[in-house]
Image: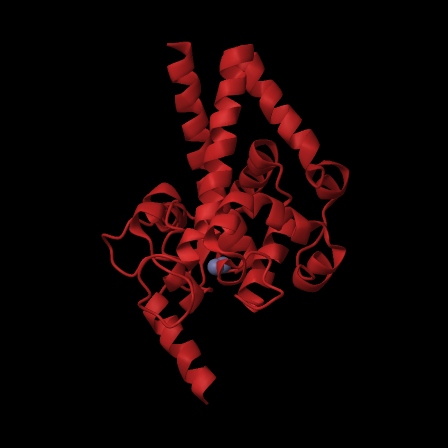
Length: 250
Ligand SMILES: [Zn+2]
Ligand SMILES: [Zn+2]
C-alpha cells in the first residue's frame, strides 16, 4: 500500500511540476504572455528548484534560444537535426549543455534579473534536489520516498523530452511551423502538447484554440486572473498567428 501511495505522490509531483513549468517558466517568464502574482511566481520557482533542480532564468534563456533558432544548428534540442528519439531520451542533457553555456543566459535572459535568493541558493539545483528528496524521505520513509522521487524524475524528464521530441515530429500541424499538436501529450503536460499552436503564437497565454481542448495551464491562469492573481497579456492564438504571418509577409 505504501508503494501505491509513493507512486501516486510521484505522479502528483510531476503534474504540479508540469503546471509550474507551463504557467510560470514558459508562459510567464520566457514569453511574458501573462504576469502571475509574485506569490505564485515565488511558490512555483522554489517548488521547481526542489522538484527539478531547474534555475528559472536558465530555463527561460534555453527556451527562448529554441524559439529563436528552431531546427537551425543553434537549436538546443531539434529533432529535425538529432532525431526525435535522441531528443526524447537525452532532452535533459541537451538542456543542461545549453543552460551551462554562460552565453545562453547573457544573450537570452538579459531582461530577467538575478535576485539575491537566486545568487545564494536558487541557482544551485543540486541543493534544491537534495532538499526535495530529503522532504519526501522524511515524509514517506526511505523506500517510498525514493520510489516517489524516482517516479517523478522519470515522469518529468520523459514528458519534457516528449514536448521537445514528439511534439516536433508526430501530430497535426494546423499552422506552418515544424512543431505539432499532440492531444494525449497536452493532457499529460497541462496543455504543452499544443506545441504547433504555441510556435505560431508564442506570446499567447492560451495554447489551445477551442474551449474543449485540454489546456490546464490556461484554465489555471483563468482562475488566477479571476482571483486577481494574474494579468493576461495576450490569449488569442489565431489572431496572434495571423498577425505574425502578415508582418512576416510585409
Ligand atoms: Zn518547440
Ligand atoms: Zn515557448
